[in-house]
Amino acid sequence: MMVRKNELPACPVAVTVSLIGSKWKLLILRDLTAKVCRFNELKRSLSGISHKMLTQSLRELERDGIVSRTVFEGKVPHVEYELTALGRSMDPILKAMAQWGEKYKKDNVLND
Image (cartoon, rainbow, N blue to C red; front, side, top):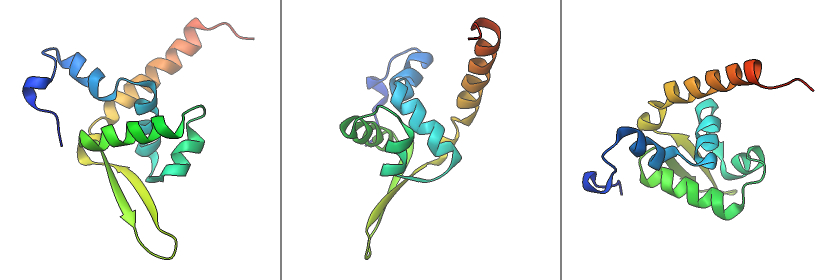
């Protein structure tokens, strides 16, 4: 279920932050931009995230229409997560953040 318009902040930046503003959600999006992932792949990639936090973040991203969850039945059932079209539309935001982070590291961090 998506959020209702009247439940969102008036400021567009605040809307974006409310949807993807947590550290973990941004890193989940980073990983899903590269490929479809299973839960445990995401857990391994996101050093320090708890099972509970990953589950909660994925549920919120799914609720907001940013991530889709597909359950595969069979001998070894599993679940895969991928970005929806809405989630893919965030690619420019993530790329801009990566470029800014690289520039910051290059220009503002002392070498060891």
